[in-house]
Structure formats: C-alpha cells, structure tokens
Image 1 (cartoon, rainbow, N blue to C red):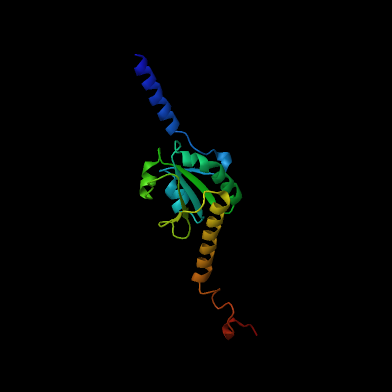
Image 2: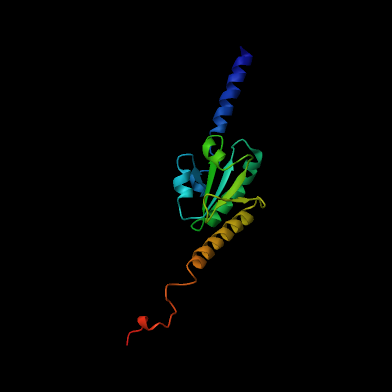
Length: 161
C-alpha cells in the first residue's frame, strides 16, 4: 500500500510539473500554443524569437533568466515567445524540435525560421534577433527597386509649370 501511495504521488507530481509554464506574462515572453502559434507568429509581420522548451529540462531552466533578459531588451522591437513542448506537441513537431531548448527566429520567411545556435546568453540572442530584423528591413527596401516609383525621375510628367 505504501509503495502504491508513493508511486501515485510521484505520478501526480510529474504530471503537475510538466504542465507548468516556464514564463509568466511579466517576463515579456508570450506563451505560444498549438492554438495561437499560427496567428501570432506565422501570420504576423513582426520578427519573433521562439524558445521551444520542456519545463523539466535543466538546460531550459538555466536558459530562462537569460531568455527573460533578452525578452526585456527586445520589448517593442522583436516579439519573444515560448512553447512548452510537453503540452504543445503539434507545433513542436511541425518545426522539427528534437531537443531542448531549441530557439528559432521567425523573420522574413515565417515558414522557414532560422535556427539559433549561438551562446545561451541574452546579448547574443538579442543580437541575432536584431540581425534578422535588419535582414527583413533590407529585403523590404531592396525589393521595391530602391525607392518610390519615379521618385527621383526628371520625367516632365511630374513637373508642374
């Protein structure tokens, strides 16, 4: 009977632990789910840094303070999110997450995010996110032919006499 009670308590503790989120709203990290990921990340114009994690993962727990710092530094510039892969198996599978933590940057091509493989430090995460913002801006500016239509033209149609 004692063994059964201990086993039951361990099972409940494990289940309860797997359901907890790593981040709170005050951390500036958006909780992403199977239900909101497409709308918030993929269909948005913003650049996103997304950590795919498991609450029980020691490396994820070690990363959390640095990830929170990066989120605070990037607030208003880059969106920062977290996906609990214990609960959100669909989106984690969709992006091929095989280990934790996995960080991906969703920039110009949301269907093909950039894998972040740098140091697990706020400064490096933030710098990588900002580099992706810079690429996106260059792509937008470069994609339009380098300026407005007939912006610098000396064509007489644009001159009022």
